[in-house]
Amino acid sequence: MTDTFFTQKNCGRCGKELTARICSWFSTYPICLECSMKEDEIKKKLREQGKNPDDYEGCGYVPKV
Image (cartoon, rainbow, N blue to C red; front, side):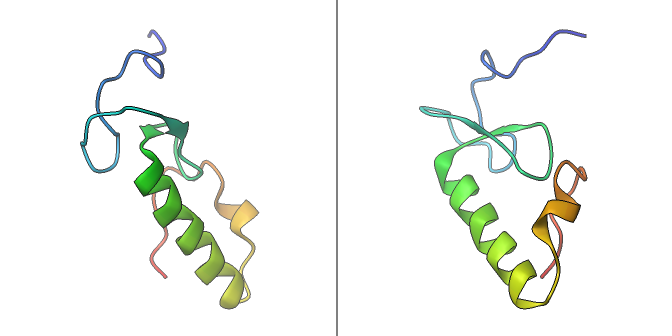
């Protein structure tokens, strides 16, 4: 299997065209900056709930908060 991180044209989360990309915290998908900011909010909510966001790094899904 080849790595498509740099060749993927659309966000792995929302499907929008990628003009900039970052790797998702929760999976290996390249995501857009907007989805990355949403992940930051999820990590913040996890902390507020007394959970450690590091425990969810690379888990393969976006936790419900």
